[in-house]
Length: 175
Image (cartoon, rainbow, N blue to C red; front, side):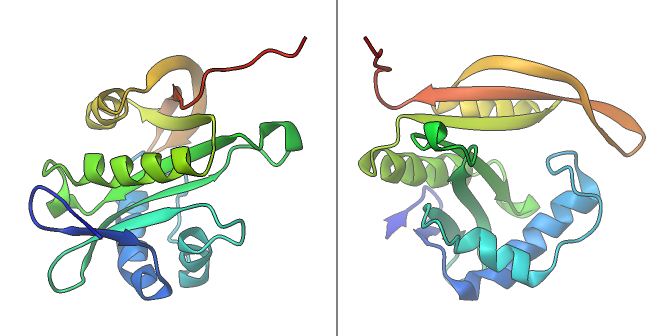
């Protein structure tokens, strides 16, 4: 268990965290472009996100009353076997938990776990504009690698999605 700058705890996700994480995610769906869903998601879907059958790590930040303040998850970037060394990450924080260092603490724990598990590359997509998310990802050492123009539409606006990448291992070439 890791402590964050404001004494929240970073712990592996458990089924009991699903209702709190779902509340955060559904609020994001309703009020932001961070998720491209437009309707609230069901509890079973959040349980599958927090406890994926693939075993990819997922962490939650909880306060001293075990209220979920945010979560960071990882999943296989693509189902094709050649991508097995690459994961996609995402992060969501409760509105009152933003700007407190929780995002960085969650990602630090998640990225270290991914590195320990032998993954070589981390990918993150960010709906643009989202200055706070860009700062977080770049603050974690990720670099911008491209933008898909106009791929989403939400709240009557056309949305670009930028992609950031962190190489955990030096890429090797096949001779």
